[in-house]
Image 1 (cartoon, rainbow, N blue to C red):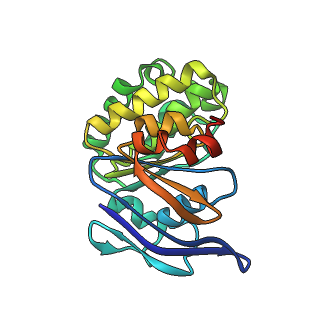
Image 2: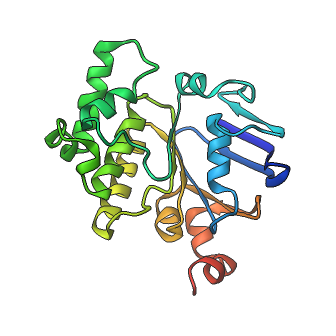
Length: 234
């Protein structure tokens, strides 16, 4: 579904990505893991069209999207749930979800998608008229995930979904990601909780200083001695 080759991104002439290569197969969960400041979020933002690409290519469903603007990438089926949630705090839960479908014009199908999100996250249905900013961090992350799904994506990209939420919500969140994937949505997951991410992922990449340094199945990376020493403290 997604093929990224020799992706290079810089900020003010300072390299952030130094030739990233990765692939995401349809129907799979792929994790991109590594320490802070190594290029995980930059990679997702480049794939979403929010960061300019210096060189390299991004192919989605076999077609280069390197020059496609961000809003058109959403319409093609790429949805990003950003780090920090970025909700409209003063708007209701329901309105936040509706804004996730801004590229769609099939209003009847949007209503179906809304009910699907409420099925995945019953707490959102209970809070549908509540201001988003008054919910807990975990509930807000569920809302951010639901908003991303309202675009009816083929590829859902998640940037640090467990950031800033209570441990009791982390398990629920990862269960929700697994459920979404089981319904046919491909997932590219950026996550500092490496253990949780690789337990969930079919395949994973480890990024360091803007380069992919390791790749393999989730279990293979979890059992890799270098990964265990560097990221799990084992």
